Length: 470
Image (cartoon, rainbow, N blue to C red; front, side, top):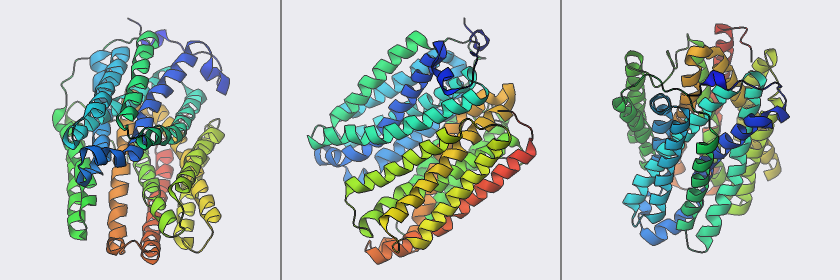
């Protein structure tokens, strides 16, 4: 069988070097795999009105996204297990097939119950695709070239943010929402064929037991935190969030004594990779409240219609890409500057939104959104590249494989805690412009603490392991 060492990295670290020879095929393929997952995330938001109009279940409207996220976390966390059991190529194919089954099941679902089941299956496949793609990045790219390919992945997410709603909107407008899932099914099928032909095989690792207890606990953690949004009273929300945190703590405790899903000492502030994982979690939690509540502010305070709201959110995605691509060539000392300054820019932008919401023009608000996107892009690409380099050969694969799971956990917790703050600040009492402005000002003001905490974690991880070369 072909091993990783039998696929030597080609010379060069420029942008064009990612697309030369076999490496160019791998670059395109892993971005297609991530793109399929990303497009599906954005499709669901635009087709859900048509879905509930046909099959009902409006009371479970939000669960289509939440259960997809639960599946994504579980799939991403089990990526290294799948890789060890099946090898690189078959692991990639298995991820695509699971995603395909989920997409076809959603397209054929006659009721909401089955739709939710297949959305969970889709999420597991999507998480596995993300995990396998990140492992491929770790195996086939090094140094600055790795940072550059991570930046192209960010670009793929930005493109998906435009294409996904477009596909969903077209099918939703003609009343054939099932066509949206059939479209992703076709894309996934083509991806599977391509993966079978071009992904290099690798030796299987030692046979491992499926860590089902930890996967269930991890999934339960996300379910509890996500379900907190279904309750209006603060006490119930807080209880569910705390229960979710306890489930996560138990999962990570078990992970230390059994075959691990995450890197050793994950979320330990005394370990370089553990601290980097705090950066992943906090960065995701920092921007999530903006993507959730900004549309409400734009609608209720500024009176924008859905099309213009979509454009403003697209600005965030494009700015994220600019932050990633614009700094992808930085290394060593500049990596530290990018990570710290990126989170500082994000914190300043969120504070700007909190202080000026409702008092400035939409153009000024959009400028703050753009700056936040640039900051997130700068920190995201370099923190991941640094963590893979710092992990060393022994743990770099599991560090890459499990990173999407930690980011998804950060999104879930960021959304839940922001929702609790918004309700405590009065949003549960109505959505008139004054109430929305007051409540969301509190959400963003307190949300500044998250990227600031992330900045401290960045400084900490560089001090724990200085001199890491990227």
